[in-house]
Image 1 (spheres, helix red, strand yellow):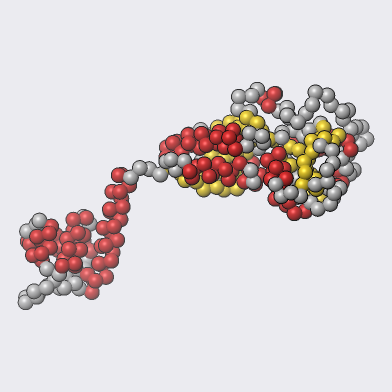
Image 2 (image 1 turned 30 degrees about the vertical axis):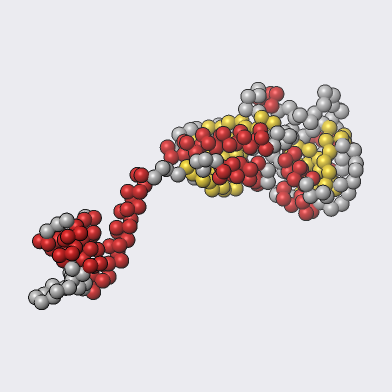
Length: 326
């Protein structure tokens, strides 16, 4: 069906007069009749009542049923032409981590919203390894992960690191604690990644397991209530706990290894996401440098070996606790 035929039918349905419809369309009445007849042949049913003595145009039952369809057809065509005239919307699907949602991601999302022109977004919370799968499938445009992998179609960029520090109920204790004096059984344990697990296993005997372990950092805010409890948390989350007025932080010596965040994107991003990804990188840099300068350390230009050194560590180290049976 042609759009002109639909418009002619709508003119006839609105004015119920053949000559008036011909006048508005700047067509002869014979042309109007012919176009309408062609439309009826394509549809397979009559749209107008025909007969001698009929002064007004009347719709058949089929014509009445077709009228809302024709109106939707006209509206869809107008919207289709608007697409070419309107500026394309910049929009991203962002893969995030639970810990990132508690720290820099909300500020990043605010910046994307307030940017001119605005960048729309949808966030999806995933695990680190899932980011690579979703990027390869193009289910997400960009994501953050704590695991660096080599995947054929995924580009990996080292973004920033965040130190891990100690957190406990507010009690005015020492600000720096030797790791060997910490009781591992009183730790509210959170698995902060493979490097942290290695550090934890190195310093605490396998025979003394934590009584409490959680897999969501949000739980730390509610389960820690005793003075002898302690936990390790990224400095950004630790600052959020400080803001409640119930907790205090302390340095652990030697410090746990910092957590490094990696940004992952597809090596061949969809064409509609290129401008949005450029804006995303600009707002991510602003988020880290302007919003969290005391929490995150930029490691994008830092050599790999130096980036793995925690800023919490001092020049000397206490002797490492021997492993059980070692």
